[in-house]
Length: 568
Ligand code: ATP
Ligand code: MG
Image (cartoon, rainbow, N blue to C red; front, side, top):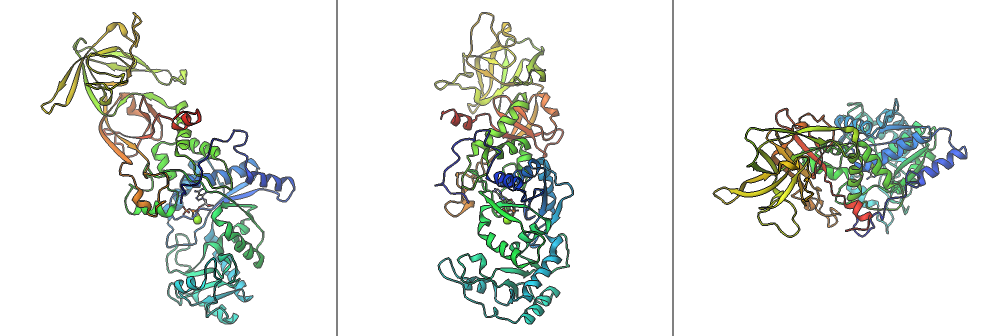
């Protein structure tokens, strides 16, 4: 969970340092000294949920190192807990890693591939008096384990003879006992200051169907018993993981020392990614989905890769974000603005500019010849002249953004109000003459005049206007547009203990009846466009041919760039 008292990243790393970090330094030193022949890393997700932005950091690090050092990176599913794991998650993880731009080739593995080996290694420990079957309940085991200040106490089953342990363990495997009736524990050190070494559980009875091994097993190794040995089996040279596993390293090393493993992997830990206003915990993300606070794992408000992809975030923006954040051992919380900055940077270069009006207000140009429609040229991308231009059609009736009109303009409001002249983007200067209201006194239309001499947006007499408004014509297409704000309303969700209480009621605004210029009818799925003055948007899969739905990926205001420039 995030911690408000800890610092946010002060600034982007200079480019020459980003991409270079302590993990890469370790790998480089091992390669230089000839300690490793080929670099082998792995990304080891548990298939119990969808991948999130934090996982992207680990993926980019592991696959990135393999690429840079000419080695390979395995995708290994740590599928040791069938009660929580599903094929859907295996599929989504593969899709997301590929989408991020990485390829494991033929090196896809499952911890469940090693169940037989792991089982034989467990018997190996039992035979040497290094593991025993404990009939205590989970609560009893917890109570006897002690605390940081109190040593653990032995369970009544700790001194069981080897033969009895072996017999019971085999019968556990054979399915003779109920779930939770017994566990296999390592016999290490109940007085250890490291609680992970106080006789950790190695196997538990779980009568559940496994997505890969079906009903072949009813005992499953714990994550701790499977993880390091899987690395050893695969010949992983650098087992890179997040800091919460630092205290598990002595246990992994103990297994490696006491088992006939084919290799000795070394584990290195880095600080996990935390982002303000964002929860990167699979457990909490699972709750959000289960309790329907979001529409699913790929809800565009979710920090999952599937959600971010659906929202319109390009994979390159995620890679660049992760590169900017860098890899360190010190805890930090990254400002959400840095993430959005990376997205904008990526989209700004490539996204076509279009016009859309989210909350339309009708404008009638009273001096426009009845029935006349004019075609005007609109630039597709000012950042890229090669993108060319497209026609937009203007007639006597058009629509502007309701926000762009104020009957009584507040100070410094430079948009439209009665008597005021503004520019319509790519078109003409218009002046508001009268306001049409309904019985309730609400503004329903504006009556304006245009100056035919200002075609293209400049007055031949050199007079200036302060405001330029986007607009759409009568050929506009109605659409739903979804605007997103962070799911949580505080930078450190859950800091008071109840993360769900910090959910923001305003994370989704779905606007109906928005109007899009016709060129937006043909945006391919997954492609981002800029709606002028409004932000970057992409079509949502909920779209139907006659009813498009767009997501706002990110707004235009760049608070991160401002921060960097020493602004607000
Ligand atoms: P959670 O704690 O959210 O349940 P997890 O770490 O248990 O996530 P795994 O599927 O075990 O999820 O994670 C796969 C890999 O991704 C692990 O090596 C883990 O350390 C890494 N990882 C998970 N979350 C982050 C994060 N926020 N930043 C960087 N790496 C992460
Ligand atoms: Mg984990």
